[in-house]
Length: 202
Picture 1: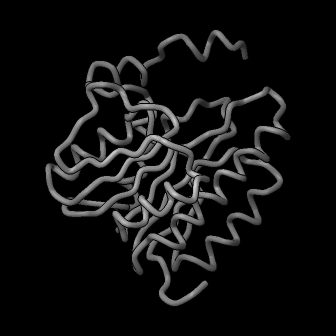
Picture 2: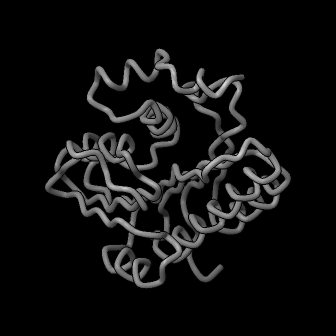
């Protein structure tokens, strides 16, 4: 698989652009939400690793000016990604001050995370870095998600996947691993889905 073939627009990329989304990744969240009903209108949603904003736009369209969306990324959102019920924070998810600002906007009915590390081409390194981001997303879900809330996070499948899946059992009443149709067939990414966050301390 050449690097350039990832840069060439495919069916999903062309479809995304035609429907006003910044990137093809929107169809991954769309399929996940249709299957697992992570959030609906009036929900309070946290979108981690959101730039350029495809998931943010999809969530805003789903909320239809109801509820609230807090979106976070190191990079800015695309200029046309806007909403009256959107709060965007640009910064590092590991930053404690930023975490407190995000938490102050909660608690949340759903936490979603499409963050991915810069890839090196070395699968061991890439999966390890991805696992670190998943652990970080778990922290946000554990500390900011309402009881009964839902969660979805992208992971590069590797040696850490089983342990991370086991963590889902502790935090959620239901959990699944799901690879949406819009994922590139050669990609080793998938999504961990948590449904109905358990009450009490974990």
